[in-house]
Length: 67
Image: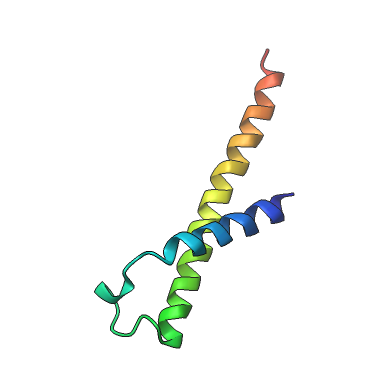
């Protein structure tokens, strides 16, 4: 389940990064290096988002044990 959530968040981050104007930061955003940078950014952002959601889910599950 965690793997599917992580992959879905990476795909969502990739989709949302398609609208970022990378030409403001790098010279050739359509080159192989530009696409690799976009892929790495999607992996980093997607992993952070999935980690947040999975931690939140775990914490909400552990709240049952408090009461």
